[in-house]
Length: 432
Image (cartoon, rainbow, N blue to C red; front, side, top):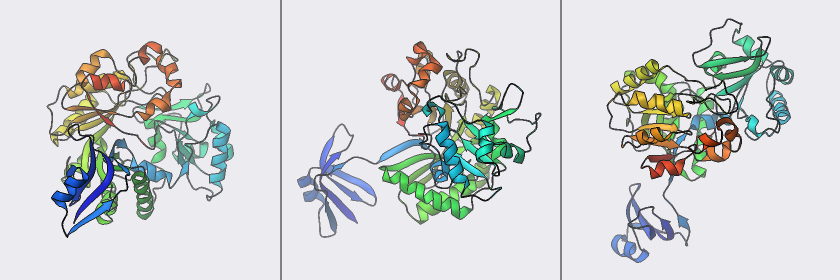
């Protein structure tokens, strides 16, 4: 079926035809753009449908280059504290949510950001025990790189003082050596493996709601990273396949696959580009460092407000090299979370050791750069996958972390573009 959309204000973002009055769509694709009279004369016949847009403005569909649709789905299932503005309000929200649960049932949430609290104080483990005495509690920070737990959650995870913490993770202790309730980075794995997973149908219903939510924002295509949230590669693909291909919800989805599932990709014969126009396998996702909120982003010089802290590398150079090598053996590109300049340098050093593949590698976030790193980013096979919303979300407190001098090349989107670096724009929702 051919359709002419006419009498609109079309912004094409094509320098040769920046504005148009009508477009022609056939087989789900735009096949012509031009003036109202030209499109009608050339394409209109008895089988053509004409839709009058009555002067409305139309842009190409928006692509979100990096978000977590599964993370959005989880907010339809769990406690959402992204809008709380104080520790006291957060504790009240926990009490209200707890009242919906049975004793012993896990209280799971997400979204706190102490930088939005007047005194930046987060709940202590004693306060969390008080508001959720009979429910193990696990609430990650908005960035996902820190989380709060209560004593019952630690008990469920069989915590003891000599417990082995996953590499790249930290259990924050007080002066007496007791847990404060704050876990950083990979330490959350001690807890999450004990939290019962939602049923398949619960995930499917929540993911359907999340997809509608994304579409309602004007987004038509996403690059989404979800296997860790949605129960692995097989279940993630099955959920999206049923919703996108069978139910035809209309959102084009490129699935970033965490490197832990590389063997699963190989076993199932999946690779970058596997799928169809609406659902495809994308790049291999890797975390090289953490985030600024709890000072886990990896910097080459110490934090301005914590002179003994540099942040955390999630993996050694040898481990990063091994992950990239396995991805390259499947001819797959990588998409790497790199917020600090040292994390970016570490990753570029590894990528320089390997040949390019058909699809481009992407460096995600890159919030702090240096002059010597900008030149190395300007490669035809590398993309800076930036999140402009971080600028509003992190300022002004991030200046305390970085200091005035280092801030000059932080969140430097225009500098990257002027250097010839290909930039993609994402939201990282629900982080932002």
